[in-house]
Image (cartoon, rainbow, N blue to C red; front, side):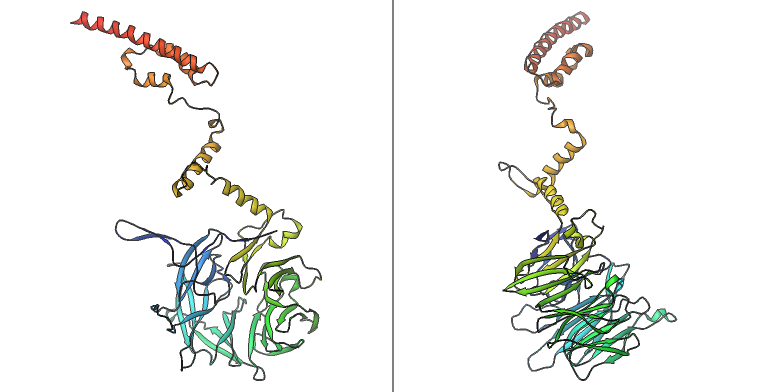
Length: 486
């Protein structure tokens, strides 16, 4: 198992813009854009499978992990950014997709000196014609305080978004059904406002089927039904709840949570009791949407460790000590286009998804199997050049690639050297056609000149002498014919 920096690279604003002669932008080549910081979580667009996070100010960038390319930027704030130090402007702090990728929810906020916090909740709908997201609804001041988390319900029956805030409430936003009045378009409204003993909520999570909602209120975990009935409360050792994750597939009966007092807890929802707990400082807990696996990034001695496990099994599937320096604050499982086959036993947790995470130094890292590393190494060798050759982008893109393609299409090309510069070929090309010998006479010598042998040089000389003699003979005969005619 190897941990490596992904092919993507951070750029401040560097990009290659291809402009047509009519001053029209044809294409833009750009990598992962580095903004002032990553405020949103790392999310995956269900439609394009792109990594979505903060980009340039006021935007979300859609970056293709497989193609190592920035697909496009989505303007969320929709205001002109003023480059002035100390000026308070709106920042995108939250982003979430629904399971189908039809809706995108974003939160932007701005804090000005001497004034209250400004918060905007925006709902974006995917447009098939433009192949992008269009603004549908804007909710000004959806909460009285900062929004700490939000998530969409995965239930196929309704389209619902839940937001939680330090104001002590969580709100459910429901997409109205306009099946009878399609001309008016879709709209969102607040369907429910909940709380628990005036405690401040810090995190929330839906179960895989959307039948349960877990909200962490400081040291208490509350579990709610779709009809907003409080089903149960779960307690744990002292410490505020930091993260909540429901188990998936065969582990769907478990609910996992981390606390600020260095505890990782697992509750059994069937018995509403604590299944197990372990003293570990988990900075980030991430669930794989395509398997039962969970990744826990733990901080110890200034470094981050990784543990991949299933909630129902006591032993971890994979662990790596001193993964990187500092704490890992952002991570995501990216689904693969094709499931990996014949992986090593310790790498089978990477069959369906690939884990990406940000280090403290803002390096985007990922895990890959040995098979993937060998494939990348083989592709990089095709771009290797000699030290004596000037390394230019055109040579890298065209030179070696063209030689490799020719070697694949014609395996004999490397062993046969075409005699384009030989004397025999020059004689055939530059000798006048009316003084050349017959084709039957030249055929044997021409074919022999194509063969690579120790006597090739001697054959070329003989061919050259014969050609010269035949040229003089045919020139004399041609002169006689001309004199006789005139």
